[in-house]
Image (tube, rainbow, N blue to C red):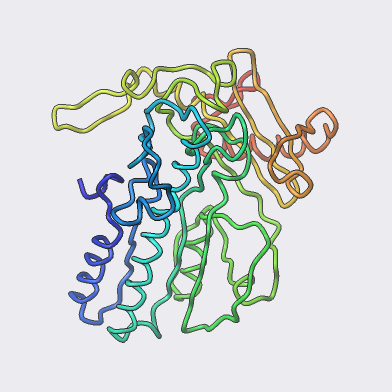
Length: 330
C-alpha cells in the first residue's frame, strides 16, 4: 500500500529513507528513494494540493485526477490538474531538501553521490490531441524528457549543463565507472566525458516504446491509431495469491501493439502499428521541438536510415522479428 501513488506522502517517504541511513551506521550503501507523488492522480498531501490552485475551484478535480476518470471539460479543469501536478512536485522538492539536509547532518554529504532522475515525463494537455499522462503514445517530447541532476562530491565536476542526448540506461554504466566497479555488458554507456566537461554530446541514439495501455482509446491514441486490445480490466486477471497478471492469450498482441521510436540529436522517428499497417512519422527535433510537422514524405533517406536502426533495436532481444513491417514476437 505504501507504493500506491495516492498514499505516497513525500515527507513520510523521506523519513523512512533517513531511518534506513541511520541504521546503516556509516556502512557503504546504495539507496533508491522513489517519490511518486507527481505521478497521476497527482494527489499531493495538504497543503501542497491547494498551493497553486484557485480556492474557488469546485470541479471534479479538486483533489486529484484519477487516470480512468472522465477527461476535463473546461480550461478551468485543465488549469486545476496542472496545479495539482505543480503541488505534487513542490511537495517532492521539499522532501528531497530534507533528505539532503539529513545527509549533511549525518556526515555523509562529502562522500555520497546523489542522482536526481525521473522514469518519465508527463503530458498535461500541453498540445491539442495529446492528452494527459505518459506511455499511451510517443507524440511530442513531454513524456520522454526527464530531469537528471548528478552531484559527485568526490570527483567534484564543475557545475554545467549538458545539452547532448543521454538516456536513463546510461545511469548504471556511469555509476559503475565512477565507483570503479566492474559490471556486465549493459545497453547504456559511461557518461563520464560529459560529466567532466570534455564533451557536450556523445551522439547517442535513444529508443522508446509505449507501455501496457489502461484504456482502449484517448487523445493521441484513437482507435485508428493503434492495434486494439481490451482495457486493463479485460486484459488482466487475478491469481489465487492476489497477484495481477496479463492474460496469456493477449500477451503477443500487447507486445505487437506497442508504439516505438528512435530519437537522435536531430530527428525522431516514430513507429505506430495500426489495423491498416505500420505508420512512420519523422520530426525535426531542433526546428520542431513540439513535433507538430511530419517530414516522413519529405525526407525518405532519413526515414530509411532511422528505420534500419529502430528495427535492429526492436529485434535485438532475439524474441522479436519483423513480419510485413510489423515487429512481432517469434
